[in-house]
Length: 368
View 1 (cartoon, helix red, strand yellow):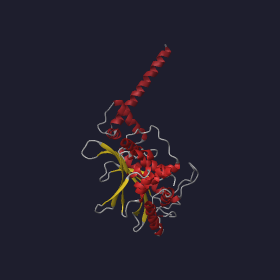
View 2 (tube, one colour; view 1 turned 135 degrees about the vertical axis):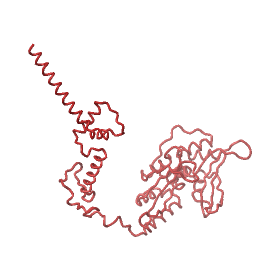
View 3 (tube, rainbow, N blue to C red; view 1 turned 90 degrees about the vertical axis):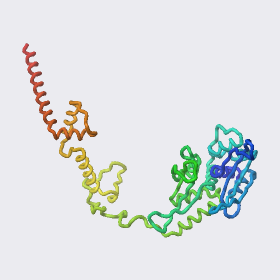
View 4 (cartoon, rainbow, N blue to C red; view 1 turned 135 degrees about the horizontal axis):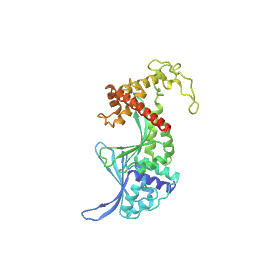
């Protein structure tokens, strides 16, 4: 197996489960570099830790198990002192920014200013290592069909500054499939948690087929066990047969075939929507009910358009501040008091007098 791709896998594994820092040893104030990866296993040291150790040149020690009641045994790979610099040299071309900065600080080296783009094959190898560390394929109970399951592929990562770069890179590696959700609050977590998820079975199969050449044995067996259950289930009936694609009436009894009152006219690609997509009778009734409700709420159920325009004109002329929030409602109140009609009559009389005066002045000037 190519050493470069194995180191890319190891970088993804370290991005997921590893950490590096300078820690105290003994009672002194001096700090020493340390890098560490913890993994749970039931049958001895995990295969992933041995593989990681080999990828970084065989350095570091695998210790354990540490037994915790109710949990699987914990094993740890650890490197200290100058060996952390060796880990840096082996992995830094593929590390994401968080672990890149932490490992550089622990090894007391400078972070490169320019990080080159990964080749597609290296990106897939990194994604396989990251999935070995943080990913899983599991069964989820169907919400509406008892006894049925659907598959879920998920990768979890925490970040205090928005969506983690690790999840964004992983999504890129798997051709943009899946969605990143979050942030979530999780018990015991010190930072907000984000989660990449994928549910369509065929897309999960495609992701696993892409990662499988570099993926660890445990995650491959996990995915195979999930799809053994999925493939063993009878076909899930889709929807309610009473409300299928070929129904002829809506839930209120309107017939789709006679609901259209005007012939279809294309406003786009020329493909009419199927009749049972939406009941046009129900749509018209709902629109009419909304218009009536709005008229009644505004108080304009008995006021015409020209009169409502006059109401606004009257308010503007008298520079009245409306004592209630909606000026339309205030207009209605004024109109009911008969003030508007009186004002309009006065305005009409005033305009007639003004016109007569102008006419007399024009005639008088012409005679002179």
